[in-house]
Length: 625
Ligand code: 7RM
Image (cartoon, rainbow, N blue to C red; front, side, top):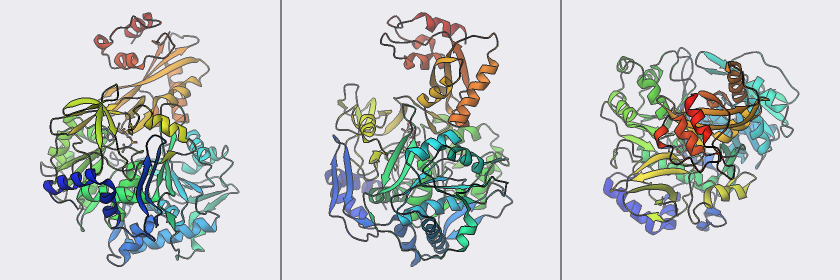
């Protein structure tokens, strides 16, 4: 663990000078079934990246078996249920190991084998983490789909990866609501021919329909023993697929591999959060997102930490639930998203003050740029000016944190993610693709691979190349803009492509437009983000319709319902505006830049609209808002 600023500087310099030597030293701390022959083999022009080539391992031995000798009775997963009156569960490393092995055997008994894709559509209960690890144990590739997604979105992801199995639950508790997961899954499976087994966990006990491929999880487990040797995996064998939205309607199945992902998530967890042996670490994300994969499951467990899994929401039963849970479990590390902070900031600070937060040592932020107001509120009311805040910048594609301060070790700067991790070579580019030196603002790019970079997009390597390696040859292009101060600290300014971060959820505007266009009365649509004080960004949809009614409320409701059904409720636009045309270039490309300014009400910053094919629509859009 890096313990001082000078050690950080020395480590970063060493990693820059000799990346292979640096990462091979980091990787040697893990349990490998056989050593790698070459540390790194890469060519960004292909693109191809391989780490720890020829090495054999199983990530679950590093997350579980390794700790059995030293700390079998330490809590691995601390589960806090949605309902605060339901008892929390402390699952020890020994018990977790046993349950993962048993579940792995259950998967195999139902036909799963190495290389199969298994879709996981589950609530935030321990069995979700166990299922993820059970897949990894047997070398099946997990594809977790967030339990807030619709049947259509679930089916698209199952079909894209040709999953042979689905793991789900009867339902899920989320605040005052229950979500009928099995019903949604049934709906999805009517269009998924590759799935031949569906294992159903009992969580809510609600009534469910039963199909020939369905089996109850608890009944299957009864017949299963808990001896399950870990499958031998190659470093570069896929560990999981996780979908993220892109600028076309089709989600991108990012593929992460076993060796590099393990080394990098474990290394960054250790150094960014600086967790000590008796600490209790809580990341409030859902395992359905990369943050949950890397920093609820794999990173903390690889370090033998205690990781909290929370089933509920920040507002249930009241807006002090986060603080109540912090006090109840003596949380030392609290990692959440700016959107949650902004939502909680709206409520009286007495809700924070009524709980004893003195156990807190480190706070974290992830998912979008944290604005100054939220940063200071977090620092003052939650951290009592006594906890370093790590603002961690990274992506589904990067697997782990690339830019962040190290808690209490390197300096923090409000609204800045600060410095890259050792071994991460971040640069700023101008529009021509030239590197900007020193202070400046531009496009963020990375010029050397780190171990957990996604290796491909499932089934579409060409798209992987086009999206991440073509805009600026020789660099990985994340799609974010950034500015850099004189000390080298980065502040991420936001997306430079058509992805909008709404409440920390990465939403592609294209699939939302596709959903809206499904409506028989819609001719064309464009969706853009605009700044929102709680969600960070919200969506504004512009729609051209065939026939205009005096009152468009019915249409707008239908469009929102269509989006909710196709993508999920989080993608519903806050505003829908019926327009007679969309501003377009002469070649017919929608000028989203102008729509973004219009949605933000920044009429004086539209720039020159005279080159448009139809400048008159800009005036119309301004008038009828
Ligand atoms: C981890 C995660 C990725 C996008 C990324 C950024 C934005 C994430 C920060 C941030 C500013 C941060 N993965 N983003 N973290 N922007 N500061 N600390 O969120 O794939 O879902 O989203 O999120 O735009 O490209 S993600």
